[in-house]
Length: 509
Image (cartoon, rainbow, N blue to C red; front, side, top):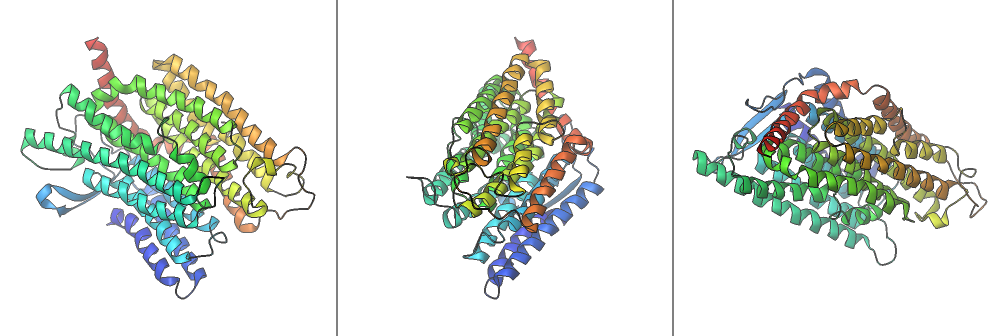
């Protein structure tokens, strides 16, 4: 029952928070913190104790480190089927960690409807853990949709008032429409795949292991793959379906931004690795040049768009578009080294983006603005915060010694083996990345001061959050081996699916 409890803990915790608000707001916060700490603790225990040499691979029935299955809607072949391998456990641990940080960073920021806020926050995380564990496609889609409604409320009810002409309601609605519409496309693709399998075997099932055996005609496989890819591309987000992200980030409360950048974007990358490539390997191999081209474009476009922003949260949002481009390239490269790099990059980006959003939230609490044009000269007026921001900006541009550097260098080295030009063009994104990261620091903290009065520095709670993230990021950069060992078997299976399809494509030519 350990896997269902990973989903139930934040779900039940959210309900308790909602009820606890009647007696005390502080009790609500402690319940939320305890729930997320329990999720993180269980995730770390699973990471320490399970055998992650077991993972899905072509030609055999999928093997898992942990598995739970019970019937749900038997008439349609739907079951509550949860499974854990090396990739999922890393994502669950990241969810638990950023869940704890989300609760802590909103400790003073959220003062109204505290119980309902934590209900939504914890239910988002419950849905995310469900996405990382579900291996029944209907259940996966169910959790995919469960994430959306609480995030809508989080942005709409507790978001900041945005820049002129942009309200938090608009941002929340835009996020919901984009992700809901793309999710429905995925649902159609899932149903089509299930019906094709039913025609071949006479068995109606949504089970991942059974659907992997489905034989698809080339045209059908390509169409179904596109259905899945579009849903994941919107959440990724891949340019040009990315425009919901900067608006959602700019208006979301700090906890919403931390979850959105740190975890929700990773559900899309996870979906591609877990479902797109193994279910449709031949179509994915054929589509790979387009996907990698989109990845390169996202790297360059995201970096240039970030450079043009005057709002610090919009700048960090566009930098996320750029960093996720590296992960997209790695997924479709067919290289084990690049796929391993994608896992490290997912973790490193989760940590560094979360830290940058926490710091921008702390800056907003002190200045009541996110506009660079109203900042400047803050280095001498505020202890701690500018120096820590400089560290995370350097980490975001891929400074050696941080996890971002390890992730990006593995992606580039792995991609260079098969697609040297893609790797060269992607590397140019690192140059653009350094420009916007250093410009962000210069505009906010240096230059002429807009006022002379001193500002409060970081308190113990805020320092503990960001210094903890800094330590983890350096640890990932200096010693990434435990992460690489954990994800090795899972990535090897994915590489074998895609590698075989690439070989088949080459021989056909």
